[in-house]
Length: 70
Image 1 (spheres, helix red, strand yellow):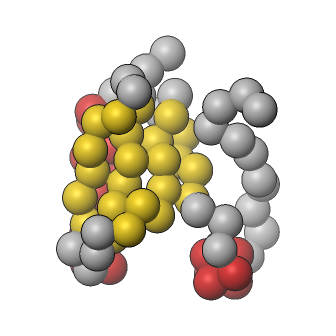
Image 2 (cartoon, helix red, strand yellow; image 1 turned 90 degrees about the vertical axis):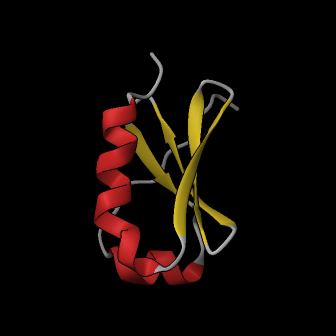
């Protein structure tokens, strides 16, 4: 199942003040950029945040997963 544009625009609205936030359709899903760096992927209406030390510190309790098998 591909990600709905409504989901991506919702995510964009939530994080738009973090910097220059934009999204781009890639391979049927979406990459989310902040200041020209990929920070997350939206796949199957789920948000996968890049697992950096800073992201992990902010997220608190989270569950890791992979947007694609392998």
